[in-house]
Amino acid sequence: MRLSVRLLAASALALAVAPPVLAQDAQTIQRAQTIRDAAMRENIAMDYVTQLTTRFGARPAGSPSEQAAAAWAADYMRAHGFRNVRIEEFSLVGWDRGEESAMIMGDHPQRLVVAALGHSPATPADGVEAPVVWFNSLETLNAAPAGSLAGKIAYVDAGQMVRMQDGSGYGLLSRIRGAGPAAAKSKGAVAFLMRSAGTDEHRMPHTGTTRYVDGQPTIPSFALSAPDADQLTRLAELDTAPVVRLTSTARTYQTVSQNVIGDIPGRSRPDEVIVLGSHMDSWDLGTGAFDDGAGGGITLAAAKAIAESGRRPARTVRVVLYGSEEVAQPTDTGNGGGAYLRGVQQAGALEKHIIAGESDFGADNIYALRLPPGGQNSDFARAAAQVLYPIGVLSSATPELHGGVDIGPLAGAGVPVFGLAQDGTRYFDLHHTADDTLDKLDPKQVSQNVAAWAGLVWLIADSDVDFRALRAAAPATEAH
Ligand code: ZN
Ligand code: ZN
Image (tube, rainbow, N blue to C red):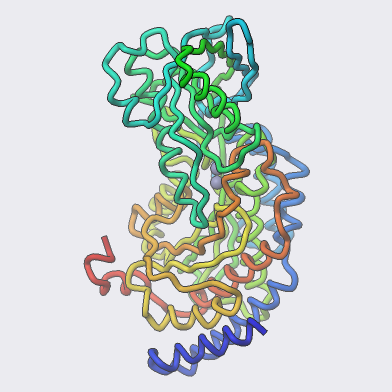
């Protein structure tokens, strides 16, 4: 019932504000709707994510597990009819967590639940033991006088991350993770602690990468679970200057990572490419089902649904399972996204990249489509609405400018990008924790994702829509 009301509403809207849809577009739209509905009923996304996470478990960037998973995924693509399947290797500094611990010392010792941040260096073998200095924001840490943290552990607790559908609470916490360790080091701190960037209230720390500064690692850095952060902050507020002992045996090693690339070649314009991106690597604590096995499953399944629709689209649909999205490097090479861009540039194929999209925000329902600047209020947007609105996806007035980490280098080089925004309400309960496991995926919502990707990508792939031209014609305020 709800679906038919939505269909009526979409048609009424289109009639009221849009010029009539061209006859050849009507057939393309109808095919997109048929592909969408078939993908909603049946697709390979859950099969892929189940096999990936079961066979290989966690897939840290550059680890033997990520490498083996990539080789397996290439075979999986071939078995499902993808062509030109290839693996694109690049060198990487890997990071191995080893063992870690944290303990409040003194008369009443208390064990804390922590996770070292990715690419954080080890402590000395006998650990680091020092008083904790609490900051309630990154800004107050930045304002601490030079040398004031000599021999201390800097601790930033800016409060619990705000739960938002679009995940916008993450920015403030991820900035603390990225910039906090270097800021603490510059004031003389011997280690860094932070409240996890997460929305849950469980004793599960959320890991994530730290940054290098001038190619050098910073200081041993750890995320506390939310209840442990609550506890340490209460102790700090009691003015007891709690002393904490930290150990970590983390290490880095030289390795390779890789992108896995496979095509559904276009019927009549195979040199025109649409990139569907996600990443193969995961953090080590869980099995990376939400982040980002799901993205691989959704994009592979969407491309396969298009391939099996009975008519290949005019343009090529390319799935890229990027390597090593999660980790910072001593020298920023852009990781998998950078390696892919360099390959495309060497082949002179950049201008033929029509558009790119990325699925890397879990597996819950898609609720909004963001097109490149100039795409809003276009004929294409009206066609897309007829395919996406009936499954609950609204057309956003906000243009997509950057994509995600994996397609970011393409976007930076001028390739238009789109976004299919997923409901992130519970994403940061699980993100980068031991709880990112297969059981958290809801197959019905995964299928809604596949249906949205398949319908939208078909519309782009079997048309001559030119997003660069739309962008060029957009008002300057949009196209920045
Ligand atoms: Zn991710
Ligand atoms: Zn991640």
